[in-house]
Image (cartoon, rainbow, N blue to C red; front, side, top):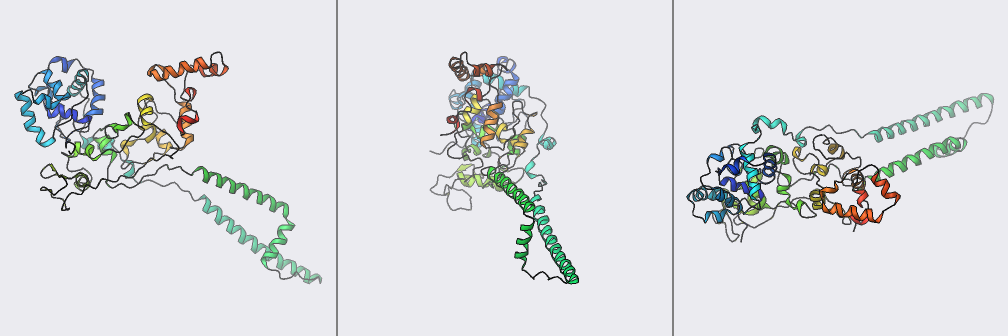
Length: 468
């Protein structure tokens, strides 16, 4: 059975809220929630499909929705947690929502949110911060990848070679002049002239006569070559700035900055897996079942999503694979070819890295490792200098010096990252074991003298933590 062509991710839950396009409920839902917590929940679960204005994104906007909810508070909560169950209640207002919005936006999946979460979200929806229209705020959503970038000059090696060649030419010319002058002097004094030796023999003779200077120059070139070789070897596996082309021109800045879609809405596996994951086409369709034309590329790129999943934007129906069923694609039938995204961040096979550990337990933000994603077009490996510029913008970011995705970068972060032991039972347990193991030990005293505990001090530098 094909996955529901609807709002299936957390975001759609406000499809709940807003297919529900009308939320009004009692004072308990609207006036007693935590607006700040509601904003975080809204951004994480709803913002990809809903605006807090009247603007339609992938579902109706939520402005003024409190005045439109025509059922009970209990049905509001049930509608969000189990929309089809709420529809089975027979309530006339719920039925009107189903008839009006489900044919266009589809059913959303039941959302795992509590009544308290819903209260907070509704409080935020009623009291959002000042919202600036995209047309006016576009300057805040700068896409750095689309701006002209002045490439850093790296031609010092070329100049060195040119100077070396010029030096050799001058040296050979000077040697020729010196030989001519020497023969002229010998001829005047009646001495035997120097033989007409080939250049190779002349060079050998000159090098022997000036062997001390030649030895010093030789040592310099050997040392210089060793430095260049070392620098070259240290860049092996360093892929900062890597930005592969993708089959669809997905623009992160449009989704993350302009539409405020939380990174982990699309890369939801970051909460529960080693990998952040590449979103399935179904996740794209949560919004693009309704959003059929992009701001930058029109219908061209979104049509590739439809071709991959077999969706007819004209009729709003899916193809079942046996025929076109009215599907107006250039293809005669839907062949189910998936979107073949190119992997951007690729660690060696012997390296273990878990997004879940860093995001859930460590509390890292995406920008810690991936940079200012809201300014990107396609995904790319961030440069460590670019990430360091965000230290003041995103609290908790650590300024590092090693290239991203290298071992030095990881262990430098583990050496600097401080841990709040009270934030996790895991940290408390590890710390208790450390104290038992090092009780009375000088090493423990060193760990505790600055009143800080880092990832390194809790075993973050152990080889087996990161290597199989």
